[in-house]
Amino acid sequence: PRSSNKLIQGLAMVRNGLPLRDELLALGCASHSGEDFHLAGVQDILNAANLDTSALQCPADWPLDEIERDTLLAAGLGKTSLYMNCSGKHSAMLFTCVLNGWDTDNYLKPTHPLQLACKETIENITGETVAHIGVDGCGAPLHAMTGEGIAKAIGKVATVDPDLFDALVANGWVISNHGV
Image (cartoon, rainbow, N blue to C red; front, side, top):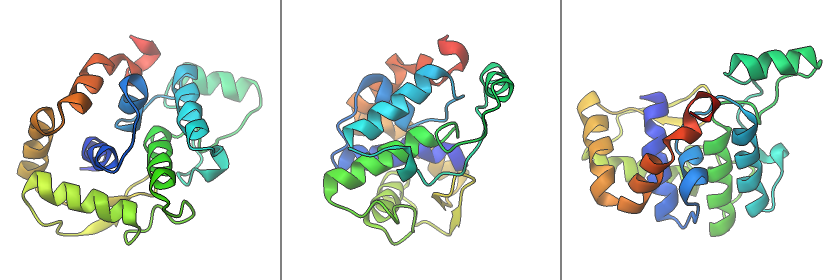
C-alpha cells in the first residue's frame, strides 16, 4: 500500500504521544510536493524534537513540485532528504522517538519500538496479521496487507481517532500542490 500506510503510521505515532495537530499532523501523515510551506513544516516538527535535517533518514530527492524543482536546479542546488516527499512522515517519526526516549539513529529498522508500534497499529486497525515487511521507497518499513485490510483501516480512522481525522480533513490543502 506504500503511502496509504502513512495514515495508519500517523495513528500509531499519535497513540504513542505525537502532539502534532492541524497542518503539521496532516504533513506527518501524507506525501508532500516540496513547496516552501511543506519544508517549513518539516523544519517545525524537527525543531520541536530538537533535531535538524541531518536526522532524516529518507533518501535525498528533488521536490515533486516542478516549479520548486526547477527553482532549485536554476540555483545550482542539489537533492536533499528535506525535499523528499516523505520527509514530513520521517520528521513525525523522529519526534515520536524523541518523546518516547527511543533511539533516533535506527528508527527505520523493523525491530525499532516505533516500527513495532506501527506494525501493531496496522494489525489492530486492519484486523489482519502483517504478511510481510518490505522497504518503501523512503526507507521506512512497508507492511503488507490486503486491499480489503487497508480499506477497512482507512475507513476506521474517523471513528478510532476523530481528532486525527478532523485534522487531516481540515488541512488537506497541506498536501495539495501550491496550497490549494
